[in-house]
Image (cartoon, rainbow, N blue to C red; front, side, top):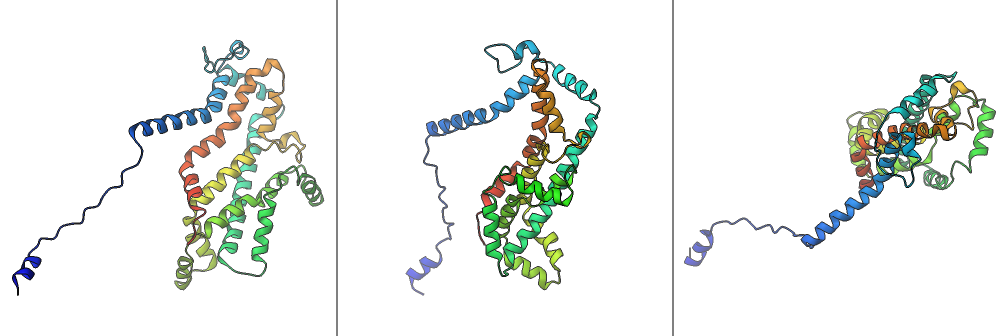
Length: 299
C-alpha cells in the first residue's frame, strides 16, 4: 500500500456541517412585524372586547357620548335583568335553551354524518356521474339561503314539517359546504391506507369509521364549528311559529327590540348569543388551522 493511500485511509471522519438558514429580516423588521400583528389582533378582537364591556356598563354609561371602551363602574345588572325578563315569559328560558341545543346538536351530528359519508364516496370511489355530482355541489354553494327560501318552504310544507324541529334540522343535513370541505380533505388521504385495511379484512364501515374519520379529524372539527355557529344563531322564525318551539336567539332578539329601557339587556343578549360559537372556536382553533393548511394538499 502506498504512502498516499495510507494517509487517505487514516484521515478521521468528520461530520458534514449543516448550515442553518438565517432569516433575511433584520431586528427592526422583526419588531415591525410583531407590532403589525399586534395591531391586527387588537382590531380583530376589538368588537368582542367592546361588546363584553357594553354588557357590563350601567345604563348611564351606555348613553354617554362620546362612548368609552371600558366600563368605569362594571356591573352584572344587565345579565340579571335579562334573566328576570326571560323568567316572566310564559315560555321558560330553559325551554328556549332546550330548543336551541336540540336543533344545534341533532343538525350538526346529521350534517357531519351525511357530509362525511358522501365525501368518502366522492373522494375514493369512481362511479358514473360522480364528477358531475360534485360540480352540482360546487354550484350549490353559490346560492344563499335567501335564494332557496321559497323552494325550501314549499318542500317542507308538502312534507308536513312546518312548525317542527325537522324544518331546521333536515335542511342542515344537506348543506353543500360540509360535503365540499370533507371531500377536498379526504382526497389527501393515501388510498394505499384504505387498500391495506381492506386486505386485512376490514369492511366499508370499518374503513370509514376506524381509518378515514380519525385521519381527517381537523376537517370534521372545522365542519362542527361552522355547523354549530349557523344553527345556534338560527332564529327559525320562517318555519317555526309555535312559541314553545322557538329558539333562544329568537327570544333574546325580541327582548333586544324592547326599546330604550332594555338597552342594557340588549347588550347582554349580544354576549349570550356569541359566547358559545366563540368558545367552540377557541377550543378547536388548532384543528381549523390544520384544515386550512392541509385541505389543498394531494397524495
